[in-house]
Figure 1 (cartoon, helix red, strand yellow):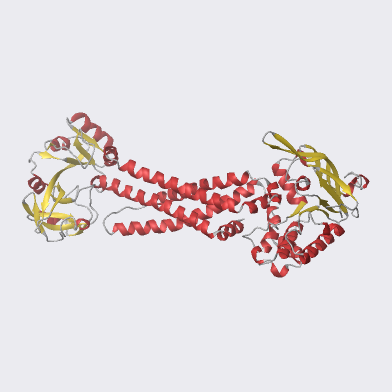
Figure 2 (tube, each protein chain N blue to C red):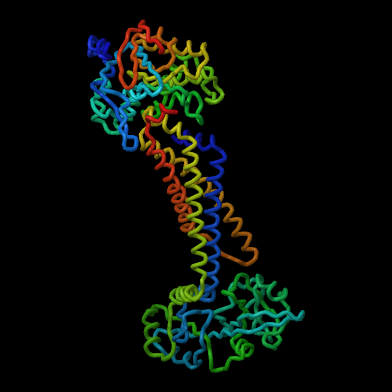
Length: 245
Length: 373
């Protein structure tokens, strides 16, 4: 099943992200490495899109394209209808800040800041101040059940707590799209389950999520599944047997 | 943003302390060397600077108050007859050797001026008066030179060039460049320094109220052969230029200041670079979640600014302690408000330029690297 098959059936108004004939190649010495073959993909509101594939398959490249941290070599990536290939670095940064939330494998909380300050950071980058910031930070922390740890430094938090703070940080700007890179890889089974339940709840609330993972246990939480292998992305049924994946 | 910058600085204490110490050492060295330079240049022109704004007349070849050739004393009457001149005061400066009761010796400069006005010196008198110099064998010494003069203080007698003298008054801070000043009457200075009665070292000319000083100077230079007239400011600055040109003081101190700036720049630069490299994941995360290069640049510059201001504060305190400490030994200098502003600007320049290393490193960072950690 090609990656576009379901996307083409979706309502265009619900499209949060669209990857249109986009590929990505990198130069390595004299060689050109095709990290991701020409791909078409649509991510809609309410999707919890699982991107599965072995190491080096191209799934992080796909996530990077969706996250607007790299430009496609060819093709287009649209976020809420905005063609990102036409944006400069500064505009891309602004688009990431306003439209995309990131959750990383190693949580990537800013170590010198408290949990609360980490969650506050995207709002400060947006130039927001005052009561609005406090309210949104409190709401995000409350949603993640982390209000009681808001004054804690990140290194004093457990892995699961750090990841929930990271999710709160990603959510606080109310982005259209959340991208999660191996969000459960550094967590124990219990914390992983909690985090995935929270991500699923976020998707159910109407936000679009794309989650890169090696972990097949996350498949039950997905509404859609994309496999990436040797740079080729294809959409499969959430119930399809993927063998090694 | 300032809170984030402070958090970043406090989080990495060893590197922050390293950069902080780099700034303090660099700025203190710059201030200390500048202070010594100020003292030395001040000493070079002390005799000129400490006098009222009179016109100085010296031998035509003289460009340094510390090494004046003798001129004919009759020039005094010639100058006194020129229009615009109210009064002319002679001065004799003679190198001499002092010998003390304990057998120790010291070189000094006997400066003779004409009583009762004693225009030309002594200045900075703290004990006694110029009237005391009229007495037999009376001279002044500076209290900061007591150690060099075998503890000579008010009332002490010793010999200058084999003639008995007595300390009748004392100055504080009337010290020349590499020489100890002993003020006395012009007659006694001639006697002690073995200078002929028809020779003088310089004349100090008082211009009549309302007369044009520049015209008087031009008149002297045009009509009196073998001498040169200067404004006080010109003679002082020419003296400094002459001494600096003949010595390695400017190069020596200038080199230390330049190296202090360079050392500060690299210590701060490399420390901030190292701190930025340690925090590379944080910066990559910031870029990934939407921080612009402008925000990152401001964040790093703000850290450098905080370090600079704090380092400048501590360094200024140390500089002041140094200044007061050596002032007690007679090495007197002052930092003007302008100089303090220049030090602050220099500190900020060192610190902010040092931050460029770190900024360049972070600006090259691709936000996509956040997925590779």
